[in-house]
Length: 100
Length: 165
Image 1 (cartoon, each protein chain N blue to C red):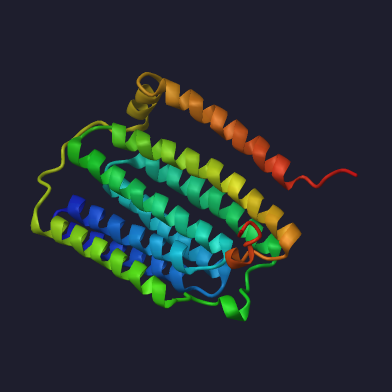
Image 2 (image 1 turned 180 degrees about the vertical axis):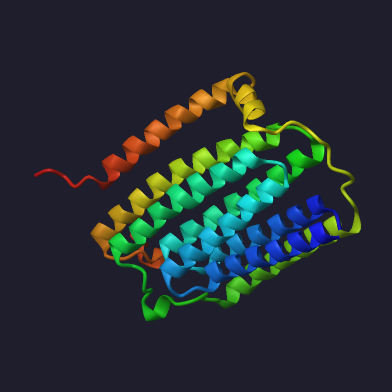
């Protein structure tokens, strides 16, 4: 099997595990970590395709995805900390105050 | 053949670490499993001719992002999940989701394993080449990202500062 095929297949598996994590876990921090897993899976596919086509653009995209992920984590964790201070919980099922 | 063995072993470690994240009952263990996954991804970047990204992966993802996660988990004291929250909770409606994900993965696997993607191209991917590209073709996104990082920093500080009464 071709290494590039292998990496893209692995990326699909990791992304699927990330999706399952987001859909089945209730702790907001764990959901967040699953999102990071999905971003990382997409990065792996980017690098594999950059290798396939011999273009650096794929690697540039990974670079930008990483910076956006860093920004997202900083704001997201700040939100989780603030929510925990007021609600004493990081369970997303408890955060149903906006429900009609 | 030996190279493929390396890929399969690393891939197995990566998938096991991801499953550890999915099924872990302790948030700290989940974070450590994710660090392992990111470390394996860095090795894959090295194998895929992306040394700069491998170093960035370790320093930014494993070094900065995951440290932030571990800090927050310990700050909130949320490392032990309440008994009702442990593990993966599967309702009947979620079997539909899981089946959908399984179909997605199976179709991707079928497409990938039945056709070869051909030989890899060779290209210069050292940090110097990345730097040239970053400051010429990608100069505008690079500047935009700097504004985004500043906004995220200010946002995080504003969100977590308690009101001074």
